[in-house]
Length: 490
Ligand SMILES: [Zn+2]
Image (cartoon, rainbow, N blue to C red; front, side, top):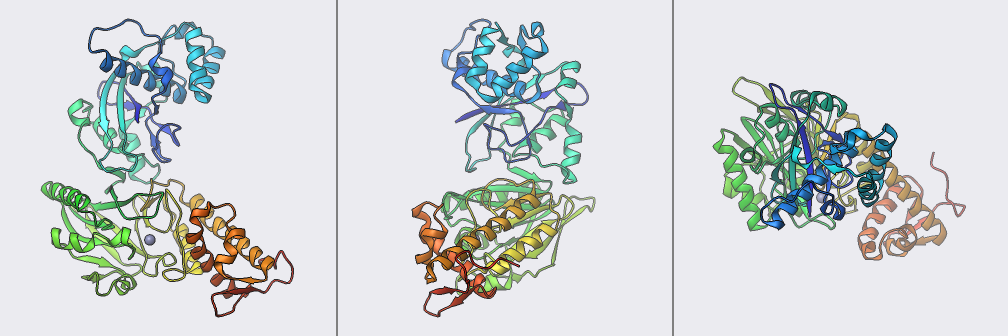
């Protein structure tokens, strides 16, 4: 799928850009500030055009369409309509057209044609930018730039690229995907094809580069985000993939940053699951780097993976950012619950929290008896919340920019599920996880019930610890509730 996005800027000493707050309807850019953009819509192809230019038809059509998409998304995001005939519209007509495009592209396109408007596609310059390779949302994004007049830029609330970057560096705002790289180029007035064609890794926070790699993970996710954190010295987090082609790509990535003067100190593991540790041995060998992780992670992998050093809760990994002695710190936060040795990594200056498998941008987190513990998991979520992070960087899925709402939601979701488990147990009187799943997970697709039964058991163990269930010792539990609804939580 092709998508178009617009980076508006003015030429001159300082570049002002227009960013829109997500989530973007047509762009999987997470929840941070991104470029106004949308997926190409069928009606964009048929939008009225000024004149037929000479050239290969397919290519020109594609260019025209992406320009229209970008101008349309810009209009929806800012209310600034760049079209011939726009100045003749009343504020009411303009407002209702904006609303029409926002709610239904086809309806907006019909209204646009009725008003006799023609998109000012000549004001757009097209620059193609590919997403970082290996991204799950691997799609071509056509980035367009636009020269705005001062008055238009004011109306569109254009801001200095450097100001956005400064707010991002303090953790005050989250920037989507490749936006930080684009802003740096805008700030340096280097927005041209050559610069934009570079295969930038996603930089979700200053000094934190992210590379999603294909991994043996649970569907619907198919990848794990790896991170390279630091500047002059750095660590690689999540040695996630055992796949040879992906390992090649990681090694190329590391070699490239090393060629630019970065010294990678070590590989850090969040926990022992195969989609997080599957590449550890190969990367230790191929990159000659030591592997660090929590003692309980090392314990779970005895005989399979050898750790060179252990990381403890509260430990600081100091990293040099530049030659001038600026540093950044990565704090190890022990967060058991999904896995006993689970570590998150917190960077206090940008307040970015590498969250591993504690939360997920896609799919959900499995807490089960063997590796996990529901009471510990809930306590770890509360601890993560107390850090006051500005963004969460999960192992699967995109950046989460409202950590406290996300973590509250996770806790509430688990407790609501636990009430369903308690109610199912109260209804049946006693039963095994498999007996209880149809009722407690009635809202979950049947194909996921085997997994659900494992999660359900973790809830039963938690209910037992709370005195709300009795462990019958044969894999079955009995209710302690005296009414069908069960006792109220204190
Ligand atoms: Zn895991």
